[in-house]
Length: 201
Image (cartoon, rainbow, N blue to C red; front, side, top):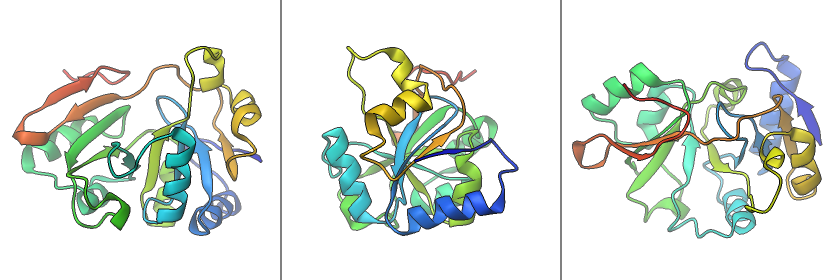
């Protein structure tokens, strides 16, 4: 099922419908300010395991990110020191994934992880996270290099590939073809792990 969404001012009934699906363990594909992402309620292990299976990753080893709607929420699931806070406050929301030491608030499936990616995108997902009052897992939709690049950007093509595998696809219009910039704050230093759409001055 495809549901049209906007960066803000979505109807309360639409937001409530999406939140209900997430609360019930559903998996969604949604727009970000970079690539479309696949996600679920980040504190529910069963849908996390489903996404890991779809992507062919071990959640105990692979770095997943969680989408938050504020630095306050982010600091609940990651350890944010003063330096990281100042940088994140300047650049978020935006197309960045901030890699930080993980807190102990993440579900058991992530307990062996020492780091977590934090996303605070300009996206309709912000309203949903706010209403859900919980972060949403964020991972790039599965993609093979031989597939048409439009598959990453067009919700209708995404639906053709994954509509049967997920519970809902949020149509935020044609998306980007480049990922977020990954910024690590581990070891009290700023390191660009991957240069994407976001630019650090």
